[in-house]
Length: 248
Image (cartoon, rainbow, N blue to C red; front, top):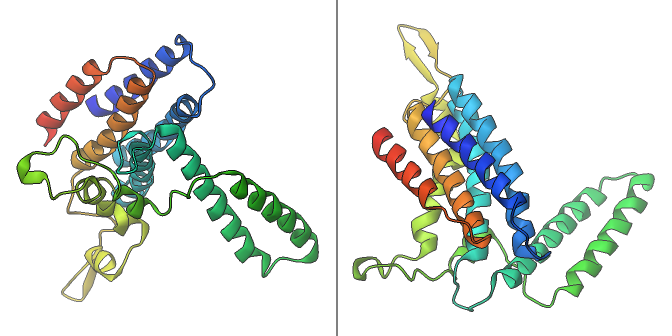
């Protein structure tokens, strides 16, 4: 329960600190503030599932949380174009409009007349919003990570981009929970003497290891938020490293 309580404390302490910090109405502040309740919902749901032994469903939620973590990381990390966070947030917003428009256009094909009028109006609105943003859209998550600059890399790591370092750890590991394939399905059953044993869940990782992945996502979101709001995060970092060392 130490991981559960620590994650909850981080969210409560950070939300409280944000409410006592006066900031201008800038996109970077609003983004970080908006991420907190969503990240808390996903992490709490994942932890509850893990506490009840449902690993694959929890991993599906953590993969979504990891995607959010990486996108926030992209917004606030240096990139090869030397863009400031607010520009990257605008690029992400443009990509969000594009994705929403694409989904609606696909839905439009099978919509009835009443729905079509509403959808066409929304598509028109989204097209106008896209045109207002002068920057290129952020593009897909994996591709956008390629532009991040790893200023802290050692000589041995200089050929390892942040895309290569972060994506497999926080994102790709959990793809099988979102897209279960035959390898996953065959892992969930065991045939012995003409009788099936149904496992129905993932055996390779234990609960505490999966919780550490969840905690890593939350730590990065909390750390970035506290840095943007000019709050200290050293205590959070020490708690994270201590628990990670004990559990792994």
